[in-house]
Image: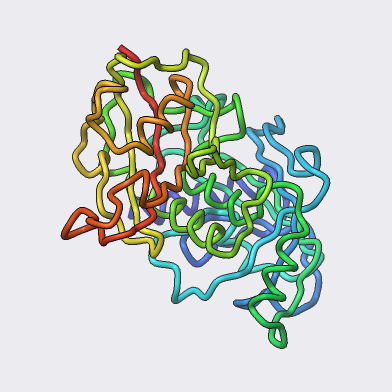
Length: 321
């Protein structure tokens, strides 16, 4: 009954505000067409190019048209390969054909952490314009990868990861408050985003955003914090999600409902963490790709981490004590 009331209310809201007929994606996101051109919907394996605006009512909080010189891109996955609920943008693209324009709505009551500026909003609105659909049936994986590399910014699938992880762009990010512990309820969103990052890392689509230190540590600054950098000897608190490159989770503070605390520079964590955490401002979020030599090396960490494993961590530096 509650779901029925929600969708009836959503229908009336969209009719009043948009004057177009709304519908719902496969995973339950309401959306409305502004332009619905004749044509076949996108299919798995297609490369789609699109622009997206994030809106809070009439206020545009992010625009891909002004954030880079090229549209976002993504390779459309199979529905069967989506293990968790996708972001609104990824989900609505399955309903679109080339030239279409839609607005898709995320009910903010369904997310744990609201983006900054949306504290009092009911919905986060995404305007999506599908510019181009490229078929890849006759292309090799290498040719698909080459097509995806013509961007100067993060691929659209990384933008999808940001939506899934519930982070924003740069200083607009709204990380959890310092007194709010990591929560198992938020872990599925984190896992979605990490899996997308891992796929793009495998395809080599993170050029321009993936940085590498002299030691071989790779990182992406997912969001900027406003605090200080930690120093050796500081006690720090972090939220983290760790996965192998195949996407298998091996550890997470979210499932423990508690942030992890340690003393930086005291040898309590792997070298990749010692170096990586020192690069973060308090309140920031990074994705780390840590080579075996900076992790658990040839011995691994049985039973969850095999020998010579490169590891991926999604880390938020919550607090410096």
